Length: 301
Image (cartoon, rainbow, N blue to C red):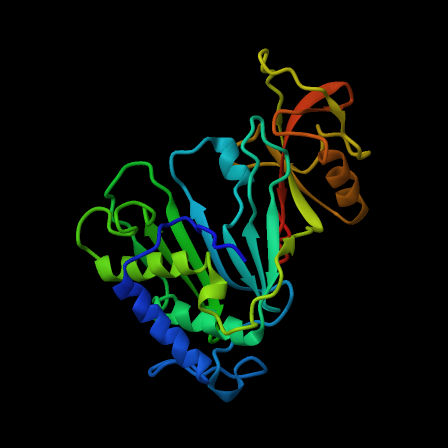
């Protein structure tokens, strides 16, 4: 499997060695010294306990905020997610054309429990199981915040780091406040882009396209680009777009609804031949749609 860049550049050898040491202890039979033992099916034998359902989140990395267009925040996907059954879902390669396809590229990779334990131990070494934390050094304006959500050892921790991608090495932007903590987070994030290089041999399965079963549909007023005319597509559902979903509280001109089952199949099928500027026609009116596939743990707007 090819290495992927998960938002940051590779960190210095010192920090990576810390994480590697922690992962090595997992591969030898359990978390490193000082780790908390879990309980239940995934916590036996000193392993780190975690949810095991196919629709339960264990670990996620995503970007929030930053100086980006409003529409971008609606379509934004987590960059890395681990579910209870060991499924890792990541953003796939994006076609470098404009306008881009309406649907993002997403990949799914199965990880064995040994691999999940190694990832969780590395997350623990990176400080992601010590409770909520925020590293908000305002070293640069309008950068994104990297948010780590970890659900393990019976609790959920949310750790946020502003401008974690900024600096050389990554995570070193700004003052020396929280330098070590930020460096560990940046190194852990970088390691998620090349799981086969440090997880137990045979624990990483074959990467395949992720196939969603639910999707958010954001409905916005259509604004024609005279330089890029687009062929219109008919909205396939009986509920008109003027009444689909509910208005967003902070953006009443934007409506959001979720499609699943047969409705999902209809909208997803029609979207295969559309791009981000395609007008969707409902009751004679053109609308712009932002289609945001939902991951297995997501079900609402």
